[in-house]
Length: 233
Figure 1 (cartoon, rainbow, N blue to C red):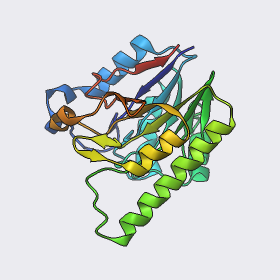
Figure 2 (tube, one colour):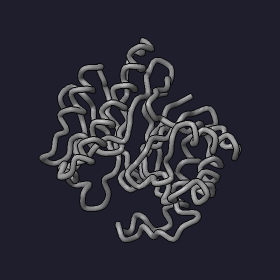
Figure 3 (spheres, rainbow, N blue to C red):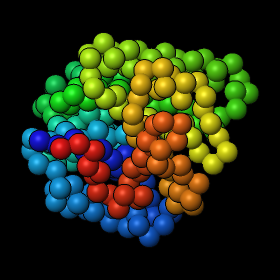
Figure 4 (cartoon, rainbow, N blue to C red):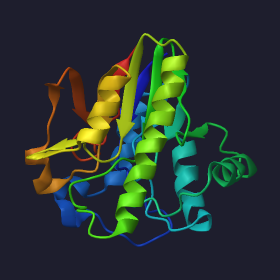
């Protein structure tokens, strides 16, 4: 058994959404995902997919992308990315997965999961692109903080030896620091923060390695050559 992660698969089995605008690495990327995933992930493994799974805007469009994911080995835990417009309530997503036979898929949404002695916690997060010009943005951000704390609290209550926090957006980037999210991670003793979202030129400003006592790991698809990253055996 092993725990892996990757973000930003941007599957597009049912929609026309070319990704090569982000550079040559994205040419034939869905074939790369399949080949590289099958090379490292075994059926008994778990893979956390850190947001932006699919370009679909609803369940009907997303079905083919979930079928693609279902055909890959391992159990999958999904969290929301900024492009996951198909995302819905936990009840509706679980019903969608159950009704379509996607029994290897779970959703990280106001909850947490456990892998051995590790708590898998997280939410979408927030990014420096937003500046709270509208009260609506502030409300969304506060809701994300509540979801994150709910997840972290559940992880802590489970008496895990380590807590991994999965976010789609980076809480640290260039000169940006999302203090509220980082403070929550410190409060609950997060040891690793795994994130995605960044592509192409933005990768040069990514923060990785240990910062403020937390190890930051970037796993967006093009950054890791569309290969799931091993976190724990």
